[in-house]
Image (tube, rainbow, N blue to C red; front, side, top):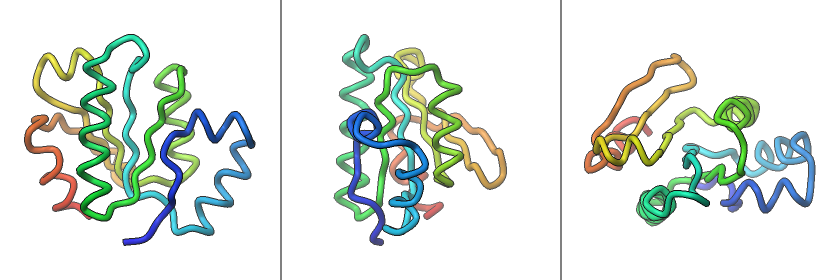
Amino acid sequence: MGGCALRYLSMYLSQTNIQELRTQVEEQGGFQIALVPMQPETFLNVKIATDALYKKLKEAGFSVLVDDRNKKPKNKFEVIEFLKIQHRVVISSRSISAGVYEYKNLGTDYFEKVAESEMFDFLTARL
């Protein structure tokens, strides 16, 4: 499946700018999935859930970016769109409490709430 080796966006952006990142992403084949944890520095359950889904997706061979920056959702979403990452999964403490994650296909602007236990299969069926 190939794709980029970068995982944590905050660590990379402290060393370069967003345009350089886009160039590198395009050269390496891009990311298939973006995981967007909301306030993982505050909510341990968000960090744990994000890390678990990331690990499962990586083991299956997908290229995954985790936008772990301490930024507002709008800022995170803009970068994902700029990098042309087709599939976005938002993980928040509230969604975890509800047992769902929010999925968006950036090609169609289609939003869907997907059960946490079904997210891996849901994503693999779309990739």
